[in-house]
Length: 347
Ligand SMILES: O=C(O)CCC(=O)N[C@@H](CCC(=O)O)C(=O)O
Ligand SMILES: [Zn+2]
Image (tube, protein in one colour):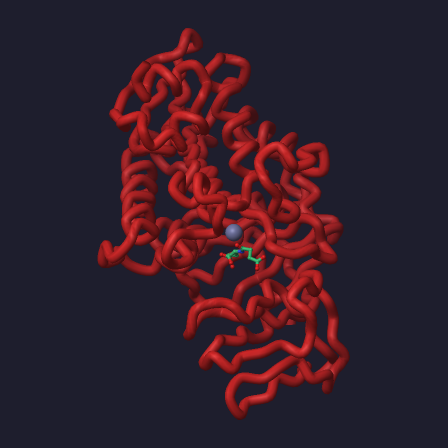
């Protein structure tokens, strides 16, 4: 059985993670006329028969962190549905199960956090760098080979949070010099009942930032619940998101609306780990978006003390175990947006 044969049968995830099965590129056409092309291990391009004037080129990625399995299960379900002819997308898709080595290892990464390796092409010092480079190439090729005249480029990079959260699902909108916060993207956030969106205030080096910055994609990192092993995810908790994803790929457009149902936050500051003495005052399993009143002691790094800012701040992704120089936490504040053609922070 070849790699392509396995994928043709709908087994995208198992073929991707079976590293004893040599990868081969391949392309074929489904009965419906939909064109499938395996660009790389874990990277499957789907092209509908006709491109509409409202065409989107949509990257849907999972498994950038190997232990975040719910999004991987969602992408497998979607790929299987398409490959077996049950789902007919009307937009071009790039379905990604990103990091099979980390998935097999059941860890976030192997040597270094791959979701910090999308700023530039990396020196190939380890497997995470190699995979990040391949993914950069795959996304460049996907957006670069569109036949549509002016496709709307989208990228939803699906993750799970390490700890519990005041918001079970939330999105991070990367900061980019390009216009990457369209009202249709934010309408999707609301339509999918994602509970909160966090607007980054600085360029980063994440996969979603890469697509926004280098391709002007409407791009988000989306956190879908908490990490769990394969088979232990309760995907019913993500049913609104799955339903919205299905609509996104099978309908030409979705309604544009914003009713302020989604909690909006802005990043107030990023705490970077500068020394091995970095500590937080709170336990490791503190839920994301826990709020601290102004003046609360949050932790320290060398001689620097972290104190909650004026009017208080909430903490997201606190992690004192990151590598030196990396983000140890985001400190965020509630915010409002102006819902124009492009979404902007208000005030
Ligand atoms: O729960 C955590 O601490 C991390 C969950 C996670 O992997 N989050 C992403 C967010 C990326 C972004 O800021 O867009 C990450 O840390 O890579
Ligand atoms: Zn992640």
